[in-house]
Image 1 (cartoon, rainbow, N blue to C red):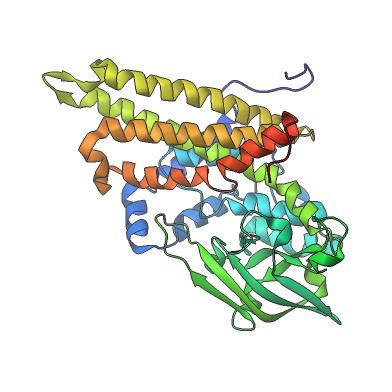
Image 2 (cartoon, one colour):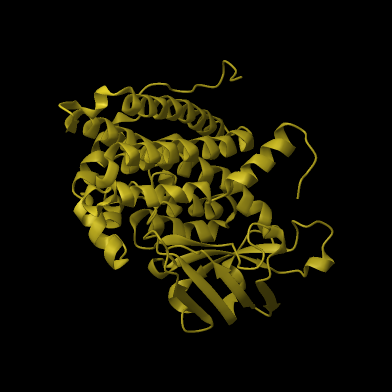
Length: 392
């Protein structure tokens, strides 16, 4: 239960963000996204527009050139993008990856990078954590960074590293102490800020992965890549804790995108159900069409309240692990169910690319798997909230 000191808005908050973001999105209609989707191209113009209006730097403090807004404001930006039929996957990482530098970086690192990230001069879109063998078992990752004088030598591989080909910098989690030499599983990992512009061709190779959605997904190979010690963020061996501190924000932000997708699907389903006539009347007059849409609406409203609660807790500096995970779980399921309902409402026309339903349907499926899978969310809630034995 939320205590009286925590304020959770139930209104259409941050209207000063919603309307301008919606107007930007109107400049990038379905034809724009379909063209990029077919060619597997990056939405450079869209990202540039958001950057120029300072939305991607909204969480960076004003002292570093950002807007200094709370997480809830960033949630509104992402939700609006997705409810407008666009996709923030090309740029949303900048909102949460920069937090690693902000919370744990040195004063020099903050001064060097954050103002340029806020202005768009530098892109910090790549997040190198997941590996092909260890997957979600992050504490057992195998990419190593071995100290050699004033440098670290990095070897290994990362996978599902989205946007690496369109980013200047990458947050990298690597092992600096062998796993058999640490007291706790979470120790011995360190975080680095890698300059991809210098690293590519000098021990780092990026290969794109062809996927069902246009997500700019890649795998990254490290072969004796040398990076300066000054690129390490925080203390050596404490990187896993640094990464965890940003995961709640990531889950809340992406849950907001899922809410936006759900709103998009519901709106499109209602519009089509009112316009499409079969047997002499609108198909929306049939309860078989009405009820699934109405249920999707109710489930989306419920999921959104958990997202809002999670964001409020985060902004208040309170523990929000359970709420962040629940928000991601419920919002992803609401989006998927709304997408399926919209697909059924459109019938055969949903398969036609010109309606954009199949594209958004493919895109929203990702929320069931990333940034954390549904099953891992459930194991977290079972163990850490309900007190059940650890299952893995």
